[in-house]
Amino acid sequence: MANTTSGTVTFDKTFAVDEIIEEAYERIGSQVSSGYQLKTARRSLNIMFQEWGNRGLHYWEIAESNIDLIEGQAEYTFFRSTGDGTSSSTSATSDVYGVADILEANLRGSRTSTSQADQALTKISRSTYSALSNKLSKGTPSQYFVQRFVDKVTLTVYPTADSTNASKDLHFYYVKRIQDADSTYTDATDVPFRFVPCMASGLAFYLSQKYNPQLTQNMKLLYEDEFARALSEDGSSSSSFITPKVYYPGA
Image 1 (tube, rainbow, N blue to C red):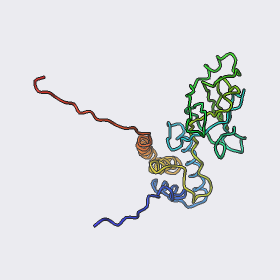
Image 2: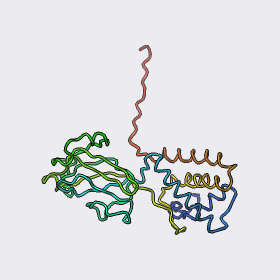
Image 3: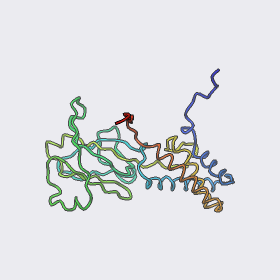
Image 4: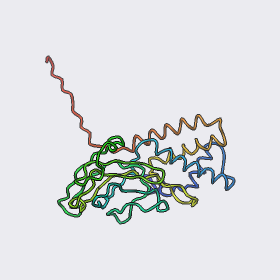
């Protein structure tokens, strides 16, 4: 007889910020007893999310979009939020905000046609871009340069689109910033199920520094172990092939 199970797989969807905070406090032998403890834990959670941005590529935050190329325009801007400015127009239903980095870009023709054609652009460094003599020359964009600021990310193409290429799009893959945990404590976080264990461990580590320093070292070891395990499972896998080794007696 089969086991009776819940039939659901939505724990990470309903694991709200207040429950994450409660779990983290319990791990350091404490509990939430004031509004300030909620506030300081949420602050630590958001600091941790910022720190995750320095720990490599998170595949769940990769998205794609298309820039409407404009003749003669070199720079296209993506702001942190609408409060910081208006991002460059895209072909999507809404413009792009909260970009952490741009990974790849292609010049795309016939976007809505079955004969879609992509031409890969080369990502270049600041020094390479700086060495270009005429940065506003027109033609077929073949390179791009990314700059990351406090409130925005800019993508600069070279050469700029001429009248022929202005009818095309610049299709790109980008990394989104992890969304903040706000004061609506019953909301879930912008984190997939693979990272739920290390999120709880990480917040416990951060809170231990404030409330139970003697546990900090152990909390850190657990956090780093959980994070490494989650990161190893967050990759983009490909097909594996096993070739048996054949032995021939007497060969």
